[in-house]
Amino acid sequence: GQQLNQSPQSMFIQEGEDVSMNCTSSSIFNTWLWYKQDPGEGPVLLIALYKAGELTSNGRLTAQFGTTRKDSFLNISASIPSDVGIYFCAGQLFGNKLVFGAGTILRVKS
Amino acid sequence: DAGITQSPRHKVTETGTPVTLRCHQTENHRYMYWYRQDPGHGLRLIHYSYGVKDTDKGEVSDGYSVSRSKTEDFLLTLESATSSQTSVYFCAIRMTGEGTEAFFGQGTRLTVV
Image (cartoon, rainbow over all chains, first blue to last red; front, side, top):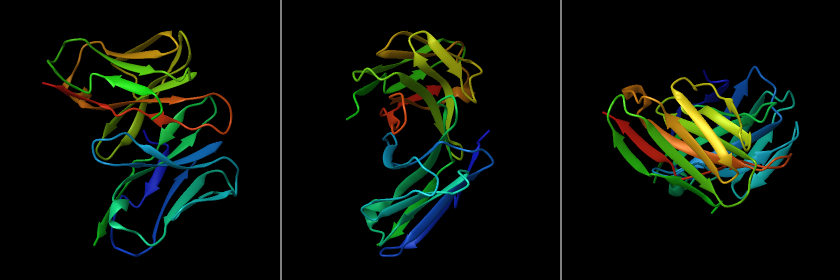
């Protein structure tokens, strides 16, 4: 089963609001990745994190690699309608396996 | 565009028939992955490859086999398709070493009737 617990499962927010989602695990990861998937498309990489404690931004997106290496969060500031989609966290384990959370569905009210 | 092509993009097949999905890359990446995506489960790893003829199982490998006879192609075979294998299948590629990320193909929607 899933080794990553991603929450919340879904969000319905007002345009302009900030969004926060996170992933936790009982396993230690070397790398955390955050992806966004639009309908009918494959996931697209948003942010990659490689070191414990690392905080990285990509435009309105900010993600952090937890200091215990067992969690990560993604923040989206000032959400806009095109932010809708499914957001996935992914963690790289030893042996180069990449495992994914179940996803957070983001819906934005315009 | 990460140079990944999945084929076919859509397929309908009958229960009990073998099915092969193809992932082709043009970037000479070492690692290739097959995932399936189902509502509520996210992306689950089926098999992955870390080089030609080097493969390993993921978390949902039962009923699937893979082959990688050359760097650019990673084939996923459903030996005898079942309705539970109706899903969207994604291939991903990744270079070796730190500081590298996985890039996904556009997916194959498989329906087993």
